Amino acid sequence: MVKIGVLLFPQVEELDFVGPFEVLSHVNKIRPDSTKVLLVAESAEPVRAYNGMQIIPDTTIANCPALDIVVVPGGKGRLTAMKNVVIQEFIQKQIPTANYITSVCTGAFLLAEAGLLKGKRATTYHAAFAELAAYSVQVLPQKIVHDGKIITAGGVSSGIELGFYLLKQLFGLKLAQEVAQSIEYHADISTL
Image (cartoon, rainbow, N blue to C red):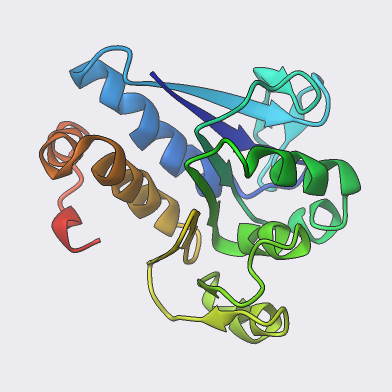
């Protein structure tokens, strides 16, 4: 079973984490016990997202087990979260054991502040390309950019594609396509 942690912080953009959460969890309806997706936050208190959704974390950063995949969303709250030393250390602590450290939208800035993007290729929300490039990142205007253990996804809705891209990496195209069909996602995921 692949252990996936989705990082949450106040003012996180809902679709940034709900999109990949849904795709990466839905695989279990087709192939049971394929993934375990945990919502991870600094405290066990509910997290209020940017548009008002409140989310109850499954675990805290301090109690989070080693993860196979880390998903870091963005949103307005990234401006504070990316400077949070506890979050930076959490991301850095996962590097040795995780297969992939990923971001959606402006979540890329949390990876950049944690020192993971320097000299790498990455993407983010289109209006933030120049800001990300200032971290010595080669910014590409793509939905998904994969550079070593780091996978970044573009703007808000790109988290859905990130989920499918990860399913392809973990379980192959056929199962990823079954999940896409099951949730009625009609884009061609073979090109991701």
